[in-house]
Image (cartoon, rainbow, N blue to C red; front, side, top):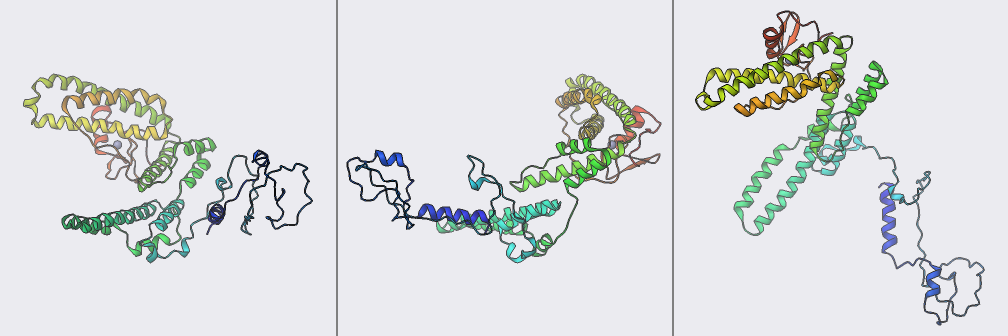
Amino acid sequence: MSIIDKMEDEFTEFKSSTTVFDVDLLEFRENSPGIKPQKRFPFSEQLDAPAPVPAQSNDENFPQPPSIKKKQFIFPSDFNLDIAPISGESILDLHLPIQPVEVEKLNPWTLLDDSEGLKKLSVSLLSQGRLDEALKCRKHSETLKEIERIKEIKSMAAEREDYDTAIQYRNILIQLEKELSSPDEIENWIKDKKELTLKELEEKVTVSYGSEAGREFAEKFVYPEVKTSLDIENIKEIFLKAQFYCEIKKILSNQSAAFLSQSQLVLQKISEELKRAVIILNKLKPSITTLDKDEDLKTYLKGLSEVYQIYERLHFAVEIVGTLKSLEFYSKDIPLSWSECGNLFNYDIPKLRLSKLSDKFCTVCLFPISQSVMLSGSNYHSACANFWVNRISTDPPRFRTFL
Ligand SMILES: [Zn+2]
């Protein structure tokens, strides 16, 4: 039991015992004058304490005080309150150190259906940088709660003899139970392991690029408070971006000027391409019903979306590093043209997401690549390589993404 819990128990006991009156002399004086007091302040008998010599009052009408029951409040012996109390702040509001989760004492079999225990374990996993495990752990905890809820609804349905509904809920329960992690997995969560944390990344940035870069990193990448598993998913994304930031920093060191001039050229060409597309598509619009199934138009629109996605990837990288202000102009211009194209021909593209990092980064857009095209020893997305060769230059870029 924590100190706070002990103290709360004490308070509850205090409150629930026989009525205890505040000693308020002003109130006594206002009390029914005229009644002769039987006992005088400071009620030495009730307090069971040696009576101090009372300051005798000559006033015969001094009212009788309410009975006082002695109640002792005992601080736990190991409680050392060495913080000066702040006025207006309850002792319960004081920030005592959070007890670390004692993972070595946890048992996977008891944790299997201990929603609260898993919630705590997930916090501990997060602090060790084990984001994937923390997410699974938190999801397990949430699924347990959901199972509990569905079980209740199911039994209510069974009580009113609504067996069809009860069977439906039983099927949901079977599905939910499949989502739970196994005891083996839980056993792994309990093991003491360590992965790279956001704080350690920040330290690396500070060591490599100085304290200002470290501060910038710390401001840019902040984890949210964890209320649900969605917050842990968000944390995973933030950590991935933070790692990407470190990679870009590494790539750009000593060649940021080359990257800047190259990116300006790429963005300018993308902008021109999309502006031309708006003119072409506007001309085609009157015959849109007949062009609906036109293969050439479909290919053109697909190519156009690939061009726009080069911008999205490049913009993502530039935004993460956040220091390349001179590219800002294109951040308004290009999306505007693209949305005009979209309005004309209703072309949707998937939302850009950084789902994982690889050790290869595209020479044109800087985004990590899983399937790389190699040209003159550099890595490219096929669309980026195509765009470079067909719209910019047949010479390879001078900028390099490998070190
Ligand atoms: Zn690319």
